[in-house]
Image (cartoon, rainbow, N blue to C red):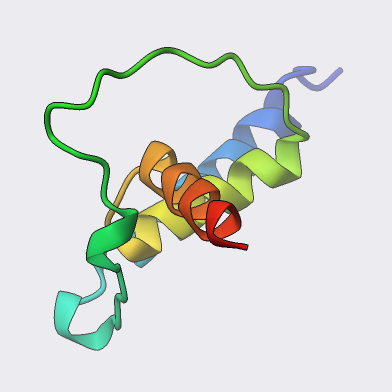
Length: 86
């Protein structure tokens, strides 16, 4: 009988390779647009937020953050800033 965790290990390894490829691409090949308004103020107090996401949404956010060379928190902050303007 095969190890019940083999599939999860293989999936995780494939995901890790994809992340490593994204991160290891030359920075010049990436186009990042981050507006100055979206960046949180350095002295602004931060708090912790517990967020429940689907596994696929979490993976997408992690990949997006890696591609933009930023954090998930910065992406969420940018989203909030954009939607406050509307």
